[in-house]
Image (cartoon, rainbow, N blue to C red; front, side):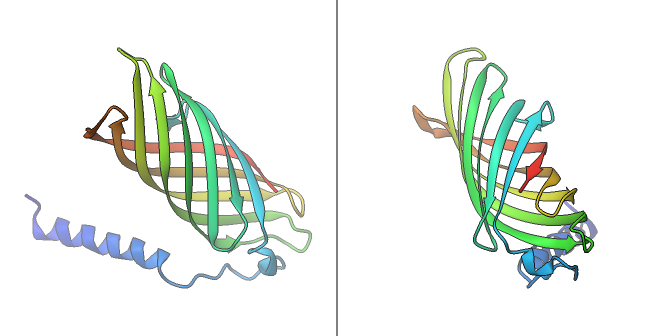
Length: 181
């Protein structure tokens, strides 16, 4: 059983986290502040930096502020997975200079569906409904192209397709790199 100090500390941090996502956000002023809501496309790869994904790729579209769509596929240990998710993406800061060079950062919260198929001991087909949070940093090396690093984590409940009553928690996390346009 948790003591009152640990419990109140956890409640405090949970409220701060929720407050961050549910308050109006505005990126720091930069010459590109008016373009922070412009549509953008990100292409990312993950190599040996995630779970359940071992090696994979994803594409992300930020078209209607603040909404983001993402889809991806990856190889897992003795199998493969594919997923789709949607959510909100909010700017944290935009420190690009007048030439369009510099750093920007965004935070996102998303929910989605994942299909996994593999054969560790026997053939298994699993589906998962999950939620993730992410933070991404982009270094814009030109006015419209940037190098992006994204750290995401979360989890969801997975169940075998032939036995929907057998559920388990499936953690998810990865470090991805890519280009954004």
